[in-house]
Length: 77
Image (cartoon, rainbow, N blue to C red):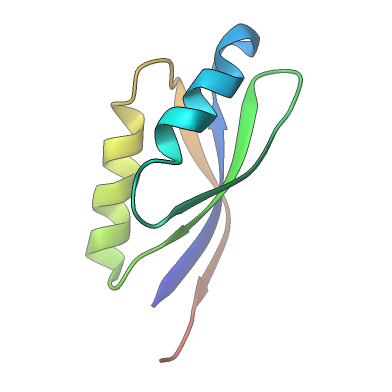
């Protein structure tokens, strides 16, 4: 199971709204919003392909500028 820490960038005034939007997706756990509009989140998926699809989906969320990988780990089940 892949687990990744990501930084989702957006305009500072959109940080909270973006965090709320992405938190509704399965496999996304939001851990915080920085004052500069960066949202810190952890993604979990069953496969690497599912994780890539989730990141692609997050790129399409209104207000999201970028999704950057900060950490990646494969967890054995």
